[in-house]
Length: 219
Image (cartoon, rainbow, N blue to C red; front, side):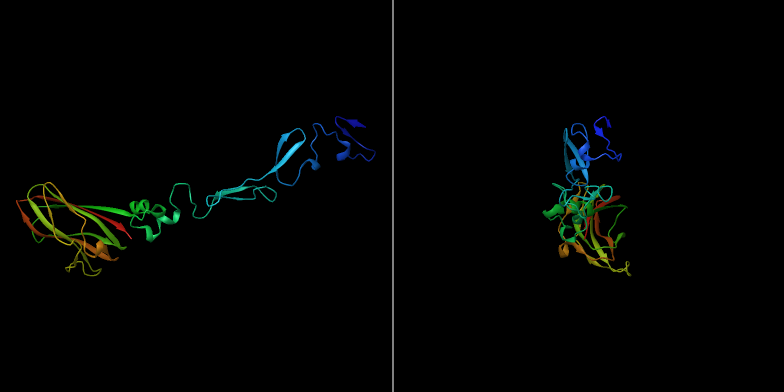
């Protein structure tokens, strides 16, 4: 008996040989197991879902043993972008151009601001506590009038009230026009677990406001 394109034999079986080639899809048409695509009548080709080296990983790409799973590789390297490790690699923390270090430095940069009323010589003000080591980038001071000379000290963990070590190589004189410095002792590197304290050493011209900006990179 013949039905459509198939012929059923006496044992009621349909075999590859008993099916017309045109319009029929049989197991012999597939070269291997897995995902298949139709190229033309009677023409099929196996395909795999594949990833990209250092970027995308694929598991079960031919779907034989399970559904394909697509994801990022560990520490992917995207075209024109830094690697994930660059954001935690201390070797690039200071803006090393290699592997996106400049971006890593920007992400680690901290800016602190401080405002003092009626600043005079001898004033001290605790700024912050550094849990991690840091490298100073810039310190800026501005007054509303007159001048204030000051430095930033780092002090020991348990003695924030005891004079410490100057971070600036020389006291910075803040003016109404603003002043800044990028010159520091020990290349601006400050150890972890220390207090930052502003210490004013002189004032002139009757300032009533002092604003200080401290910029550093967490190492």
